[in-house]
Length: 201
Ligand SMILES: Nc1nc2c(c(=O)[nH]1)N(C=O)[C@@H](CNc1ccc(C(=O)N[C@@H](CCC(=O)O)C(=O)O)cc1)CN2
Ligand SMILES: Nc1ncnc2c1ncn2[C@@H]1O[C@H](COP(=O)(O)OP(=O)(O)OP(=O)(O)O)[C@@H](O)[C@H]1O
Image 1 (cartoon, rainbow, N blue to C red):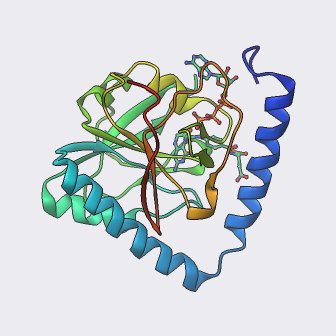
Image 2: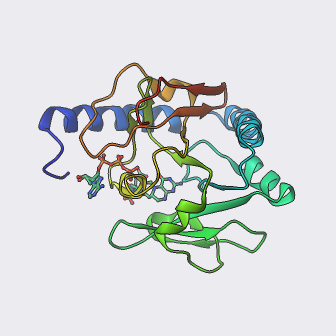
């Protein structure tokens, strides 16, 4: 944790991460399957409504919301999807989603096999779908604590919409917000898409 994170907010963030991790791990296989289908439906609707031709998304770690139905749809719909590649300095590179077999990258997270694009490639995206641990109704996003996405979001045009992808229960009333935390515009969950009051523009 950096100097910009106060002790009290750090403690609360740790507590929320532990709660969410336990809740996600407890989901049944049937529930995961249903949530995955419903989540992808809402992701497709959002990207369609925005008319976005280039977006970012992610390949899920074990218990994360699973957007694979959306990723399959994007290939057929001609929507370019940039997926994150974790770098040793906790910066992100990107690689395009494709039918090619994936490889296992840093933190055991799958990554596309194709050419690596620089972090700045996210500037081509018209919509960002970002992984998160939790988000609050004012748009404060909590990740898994390594700051990868905060660093990228800080470099992007704040007019480009950013949606956290979480389970419905991970949308909380209030999370601590540190100065480096870049707020998001909404959340996509298996229960639907929520937009938060404008915080960034
Ligand atoms: N699917 C996905 N890809 C992503 C992210 C993400 O949140 N989800 N990231 C968003 O920033 C970056 C990776 N961030 C990470 C942050 C923390 C840990 C981590 O704490 N890993 C622990 C194990 C945690 C556990 O399983 O309980 C470890 O490696 O020991 C891993 C990745 C880039 N790619
Ligand atoms: N724009 C930035 N530049 C440099 N360091 C940053 C930036 N944003 C966050 N950090 C650092 O990254 C670390 C993790 O921050 P935080 O706990 O908010 O991450 P997170 O939102 O949980 O993770 P992620 O963005 O990877 O999902 C902190 O030490 C923070 O100081």
